[in-house]
Amino acid sequence: MVKPLPKRFNPDLLERDGASFEVTFAQNNLKRLEAAILTAENDVRCTAVFSRRKRHVHVRGSFQTVVKMQCQRCLKPMDVEIDEPYELVFVEDEDAAEALPDQFDPVILDENGDMGVYDLFEDEIILHVPAIPKHLDGDLCHVAKTEFGELPKEVSEDKPNPFEALKDLQLK
Image (tube, rainbow, N blue to C red; front, side):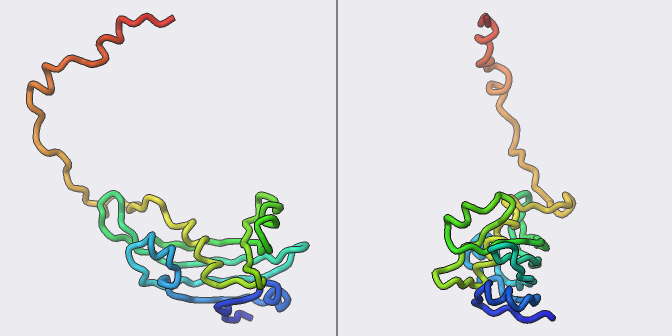
């Protein structure tokens, strides 16, 4: 049965229930993400299934959202769809995170062993936002011509090649 995930939770207690969770929240709750996108007008939909493996609580699921970004080719707004799975391991402190094998992605809990739902998903979403967003279809980008006239003749033809002196250099 899918239940709503509380805004603040203890992963150890949720794992004991063994239930699936779902949460939907506004992008404007994710302040660091909000700084990387044009507008935070969409929702983020996340699913989470808690389980225990050996000594650690794991959470796996997926998140979906659409972020509004600026295309770096044409400088127009564009929508970037993010639909990604994730799997995270909860740990108590930095030392426990360092002790985990490399294949695990740790999440450090606060001093009470709790985690905020926004804190859980914000880093994962930011990791999937493209560093250089651009339209995948080149037809959507109408880039203006960037030529601004012709070079004067004295610049284009009469200037000596600065590398001309290197041709006489003998390499051993």
